[in-house]
Length: 57
Image (cartoon, rainbow, N blue to C red; front, side, top):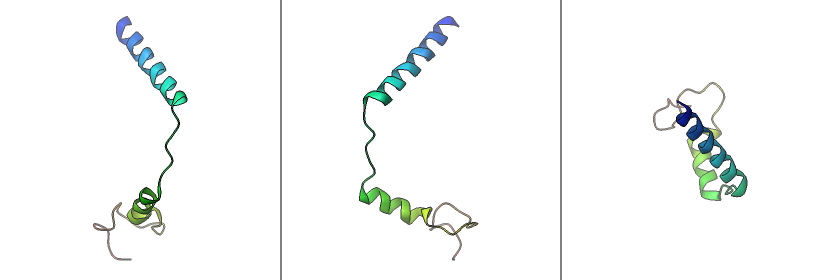
């Protein structure tokens, strides 16, 4: 059990170190277009997470 705890702690610290050491890549225009297409601009209360499977507006 101690080994698992040490491995979990080491993994968490390694992940934190990587997160702090490497910069976050900003979203490019094509990714923003996909997010906008798949529902970021959906009216409140609209069901479904994809336009292909949701009802008409």
